[in-house]
Length: 595
Picture (tube, rainbow, N blue to C red):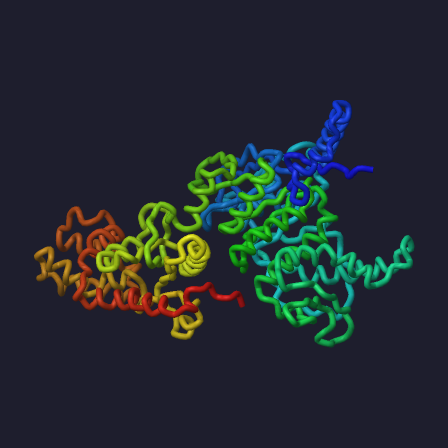
């Protein structure tokens, strides 16, 4: 008998057998071709009847959104990428899917956490009207929804007893997208129980424990081998007694044959968690919506993409995978998936979506235009810049209006004339700047290896010990923040001298001192900037120097910080001298290892 043809449908992620190989299997007679076509159409009809894929979502007064409609998600889309800046509401979409499942599928009441789910005055009892989700095909309500939050780290576990795990499709795995989501220990119990059950299977009484074990963990091991070169799931120790070796997963890693789960890196644990959970639970979710928040957590760029491809292999073709991401690795893998099977991927881009106004959002295809947009989002719109020798990712947002690229613009204005080979770009908050700096390093090391990328963050209230624990390619200002330089005494003196109003210096410094004394820290000039600006404007009768304190500092005061001033020399030393010392050390040019 011939080999069965592969299922080639708009919703199928085909990886093992290319279409070319299938065509070679087809017969050439007209009758056989017609029978083959009819068979494929029958497969397609059966697949569509059992498929669960979202067509549209409507949210009203739900979390951040006043009135949001997501529509026209194609039935062919097995992978939906949700992208956009932090805080735009990406995870809220998963909360909506989860709450919809709670109400419609499980017939549960909505959660009573009004402050979490409802916007403005909406009450929890109105949650059913907050969310409307339309599914392609039959509107079945018995299929579960699989959701993993971004808080899915289980550093260690020890099982000393055996418990039967419940059907995951019959209960909610998590309540909210902000909740902890530990699953490794639960899945250990599920594997052990399934092993015992299989050993006593009356239909196959002759199978050995080894055969049962290999059958149960074989697919998990195969997935790990495709993702890691030196990590193999070796064994599962029984939950016997209090021994440290009892109740755990063991791996072969390098030359070590019995490597305990707790010793894996955070990245390895993150991958194993998802792979283990999906393999064990996909039989309970054959036609379901799978939602994974921030897939790329703790993973290097290349592994992020490999993991996405593996998830597409694991998840049934009748399901749909939703992922929130900022990752270039994930986006590159999605581009490859789309190239292999056109129409299988779509993007929901929340950039520019105002949560306070009615919005209709339609998916974008992952074509070259969308890819450039994603690239700009991931590396703060550097795609059109010439490659500098040094790139410094500093704090500040590249979005918004008033403070858009504020820090980067100030650094470029003050230091750029002396060091045109250094470019500053916005990277978000301190933690985001560090993460975005690492993403940029990963990207540029391949295409622009001569460009050195570091991160620059404010000192704030960090102790010396905190600073010592930062990644080695992170620079830290000596003063609290950039406002400490812009509103320094000598900066204000230089500005007044250039304006021909030096006689007002004592009054200006007195205002500054009084404003600082009223603040909680006594040295934070950022919240004091507005009062100081208004006082200067009133005292000096300033015109055309900036319509608010941010524009005044960026466009006016920054120009008065010049070489030879104490503030300039300190800033130069804090940034440029640190940069030269940092990039002179080879180990600082490599991304730090995950703990």
